[in-house]
Image (cartoon, rainbow, N blue to C red; front, side):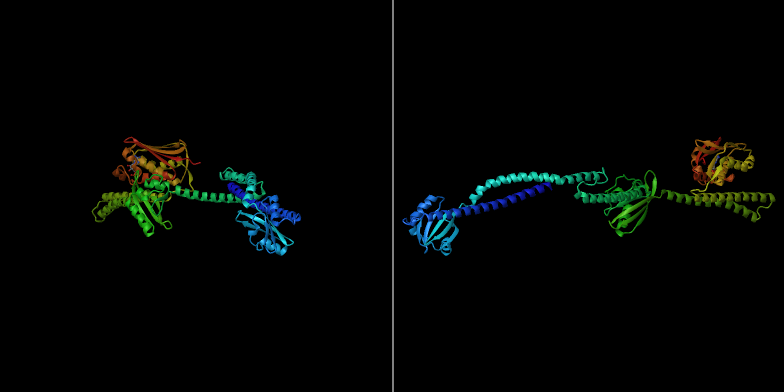
Length: 568
Ligand code: ADP
């Protein structure tokens, strides 16, 4: 801007100088003309007043013109236009002069003048003619031409121009500095505002800039608000996408990745920077690729289940939806491995339950048939078979009770309104419940330790301890012992049930918590076991953030320890 203003001022100065030069030239010319005219008229008056009638007009013309110099030419003409004498040419050969403009004018009005170009001399000549009685005196002199004038005054104009130009540039520079100073100041604070060093542009000391400052402050304020809200929105969306459990991949029309989250990278086993990469090259799975093409082509969503081998086998469910506007697609991927596993467990459980129910029922049916067909006659045998039927029925009832308990436990995933349960009190209950049963085989149940409370449902904790102590009796040797210990350990409450029984082989220790898993099926059945006791223990412990520990030695005994958070 500064350069343009200086250039503009220079051009302006030049134009002004050119115009004033032209005006000066014109004025000088006019003045010169006036002077030339009055010189001619003055000389004419002087010549005519000192007239000598004895001398011829031609002689006067020649003598006076010679005295006047300046190239003055004097001609005398009579009223008919006949030349009477001339200072330069032979008047006798000169043509009639009545038609010359200045002469004609003098004939009419007494005085006439004209400027005419003379081809002979190559300059303009000023002619002045005046009537004196019956003679017309005509004086002429050459005029300086314009170039001469221009040459006269050009040096002064050039000097004036240079001086004016220098003065103009200095003046404009100073002025520009003064005018632009507030703008530079504004520019500086504006860049500070943009750089985040300031939040607002301070009030300007120049009143003219106040509206600009106000406008800028208003604008930066608004932009700030917009940017903040846009940033918040993007952060929200970013967080949703980043932390969602499902994998998300957004593809453009050429199936290049526009956006993807960490979950998607993990589920597909891909690197983390996918932006701009062709999805078809990343996931070389026929099913996924053809489903993607189909979803985009037919513009309808597609759901696809996929088995993928990562560190272990995973099951993925992929929802592919076409994105209408950009003609790409969005993919949501969820890990359904747990779902599949749960489905399998349920399927297995149903099959196991059917099998477990069928066995006692078949036995009962067999005995009942024997009895109804009269094959068992004596009272002793009838009693024996009736006892066997009763045993199987009891097993059935136990089984159904355990199945119902498991179903019930599965429903209550997050327990609320818990009570404070004293582990020692509950253990004491269990001990008195099972003492008689244990004493039949000479087994002693001992309880020791201190009272400690946990947050739980009393009934479920009782069930847990009952199952553990029941097993400790069932899998004990005759005259063995069961030691129940309750107390605190490492900031936790614990209950340990230790027996002197048959022990659990190492390779079975992991699996005994599975449903219907038994180390020795025959022994379990003989003792009325359902194979569900420990899976109920595991489930109940899990409900209250309990941790199960197991140590066991074959033919020496087994110790189950369950640690719970203490109730506060
Ligand atoms: P069951 O009804 O067969 O006892 P559980 O789920 O309670 O079913 O136990 C699963 C299996 O774990 C049992 O069949 C048994 O083989 C083994 N087991 C459980 N507790 C003990 C123990 N205290 N000593 C030895 N083996 C045990």
